[in-house]
Length: 625
Image (cartoon, rainbow, N blue to C red; front, side, top):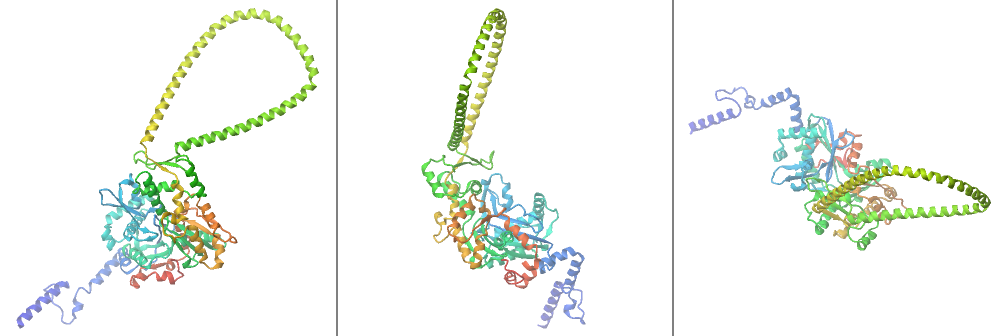
């Protein structure tokens, strides 16, 4: 038993020496403890010296592992919208071209196209599995959103760590990252050098009342997967109201953010929400109205349920808000389709010669418009002729009064003229003989001229027949082309679909859902009474849906019937409603240091990677979110 114990002890010591890096022949010194002789204690010193020898790699490793304590060298602002992503460095005057917040893939392919890559596809019908990140204004698909964020960083030339979990799942290797980064830099004309992610501070613009669990997940993606140094959060609607607040003497703004999947009403005072309970949210936006347009047109004409991008173009170009809904609906009962003033034809693209579609006035309506214009022109000419006749009558009366006075003078002039006529008759008899001889010579010239005229007329007639034949052939080709074209006829849908903003119940939504005008009134009335007069005078429309025609006039009419008469009311639309939140965030955060509006990676790790948003809500000046 003793011998076996000794042998097992020797085997254990041998294996321990091999694991610790010492050879089997090397003996341990009895005067020193075990831990001091092992090379595992010395190895951290070697790693540290290796890191010190290469300062660049050491800073990067420390930034990714222990958190970046150095101040950021670049600040990135990201307006995370439901339809597009507005982004750019804080030092730039305007944001970069918007990046579509969507992903899809081609038929029979597994490669996922993200953001601007979808615009390079010639025929959008070849795209399937469309995926968006937001629903009803809330971020619900973090996987797709991470893909879009990564595409954005590639376009900016930002390098992210390839050892994270997301890098392994999505396959972010260094080779493809550099390739995509160079392509994006060349396309956008940015600096050709890459930017490490640990030198960047990111400002995310989010909608109000964003769930805290969702905020923790987003911060985990930006800190853990992208490896940025600082992350700040801000209310996108409050940032959009920055210019309006600075321009008004009351420092207030009732900002209405009409976005892709929701509509938000946020009253603000001095760049802060007046009261959190006064914020109103409608689950209506551009996406909902485009879906309604798909249903209506698919029921009447073609199956367009999969043509979201095409119907989006139709909605943007042709939709408007009616200023007199009952009158326009009554016109639809009086006149047939194709003869109303709001009827339009949209020629669908064939993706061979026509890639965008074409708007055209119906033929019957075009003829009616030409007839009305001709009648108006004739009526104007008739009026001018009547005026000329009246002037001629007045001149004739004046001439009659002058004739009575000049009768005597005229009789004397007639006697003199008779004498002159008799003398001319005597001289005319001698001239007739000479004229007969001249006529014979001129007759030959006239015959030659007539022949030349006949030849010219023949050539003109031939040319005329040729032109008529060419026109007939051209008309035949045009009619044949029109028969081959697929025309989408739009009539009432142009103004009935946007009417859902003011009458949500007409679209089959829940009865307790109020319209846009009622939501604004409810939001203002929920604020303290001293703020209400100023808020009604600073209604500010931002977002893509605010570009609908007649929306300002229609909203004024709806609000005037609900707002008390003693309050003045003024509505204004932003100059660039889509980029307004990004521009406001740039003006707001460029004036304060990053320690005020952001959380560092070290702070995020110290609080066990959860609830890091408390600093933004409670400390350092912040209810930014």
